[in-house]
Image 1: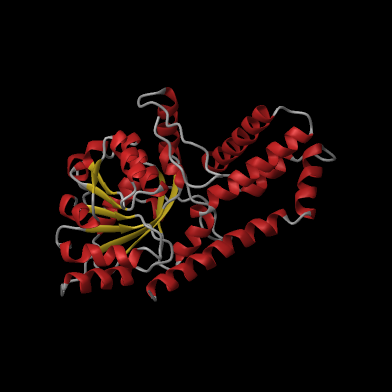
Image 2: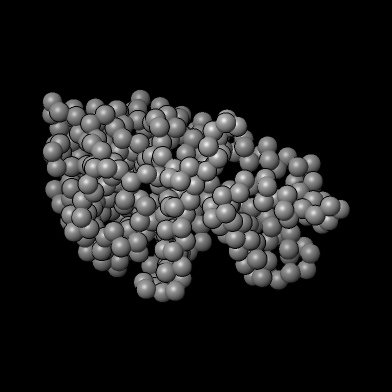
Length: 349
């Protein structure tokens, strides 16, 4: 079976078979979450539970049909994030593997992995633009300028919609680089997205923001694609995408570290490793679903578990004593800071 690799800490993915009960549960869970109210405002006078969160509202502009979306989706970059999105789009019903194209960057093993999935593997980024209407720029920030330069001569500003997942790189930089490379006077249409790797299993948490020329229909198209693989919010301004990187873009790594640490504790307390890992992972999954599906504040849910003088309040006390809350907050801020730095560095190349 094809595997996604990201780093040594990223375990091989085993997507559930299409039509399985597991995928049906995921779809039902996603549908429930999309109907959830937003969290309360810090303003005590604000309405506590709006019926439809503004960032999850369905845009009024008509969204292209499934067949239009399936016409051509390309990936410039064939790494872990691109593969996770490709798998997620197919599992979520937004595309078929045969509708997708990717440039493999000259890596034979990468090309073979995508071919085994049934994706059209092309030899250059320019070929992806010739083949596709929606083009995901799924390369590292420092690689993006070169990729944009290669794409430039093949840009059709009326046809192409570019979706960048490069952390920190502004939509304006992408627009200017493509326009200059293409020797165009019109600005290309760009939407920035910050996804995360759980899109491969239909549980992504993503944020999106439009560039200067992207239309509401463009944004609606991208939101629907990303919502086929999980949750996607439209942030108020582009600067907030760095915060999205800190919270959800990097967030799976924090969760994996916590799961591993909980499992280590279970092993230390006598559990077999496999059982400890299963219990830790399922606990985080269940806790997350309670936050999303009940609308309760996480602190209130925590208080419900902490009975007076019990084991849990002592465990929470140990977490606080060892700086757990502060460490998690600082992790988000450091990730957001580094995203800004990566964007600035790539724009100087």
